[in-house]
Length: 224
Picture 1 (cartoon, rainbow, N blue to C red):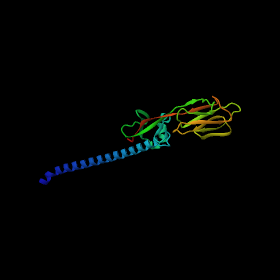
Picture 2: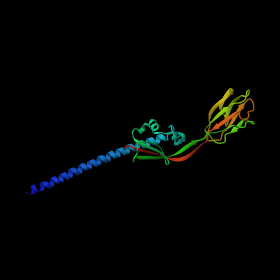
Picture 3: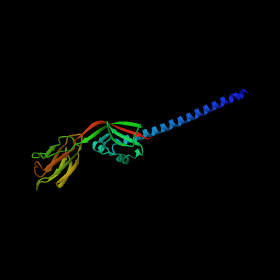
Picture 4: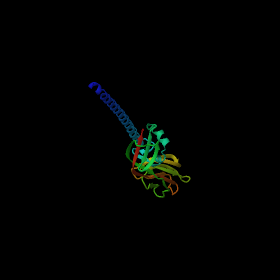
């Protein structure tokens, strides 16, 4: 009689035990899946942020220095094409308080932040007075210069030097537009070797001073 009385209690206990075990396994599977998803999000977020600031990437002029023009031209299609690691995940890229690009609709996800410099380049030009010495000093530091050489007839510019270094040379004379790389770490003096004294208008100098400002690049990846 006592054994029969305990049967319903035993059945209830077994039901509770089975339900609890099943619930525990479901919670464990959910936690494992969530942890796996979070790890994947973090891996992709770190990889994407590293590539965005890498020295050879399409957005940078050097490591951790973003080109403002390239950043402004970034689109979702270009992001996916340049960085296949994005895949079909929802991704948001922000620079300070401005969203640069967003693919999908990231809800939560994993966010990686990096300190960067944003480089903005301007174009300046002038016609130097070359009446004495055939030299000119570029007003601001720049990493490149564009020279338009248009001397009068019977005047030939053979060589152009930047701080003593030959950047252009032609024994029969230089005429036209030329580009030359300079050191951005020093002020540059240009010297023009010619068979005659040059005048204002014979040379036009275009240079590209840059300004670099600090910013926070924020990359969010949501695998969902």
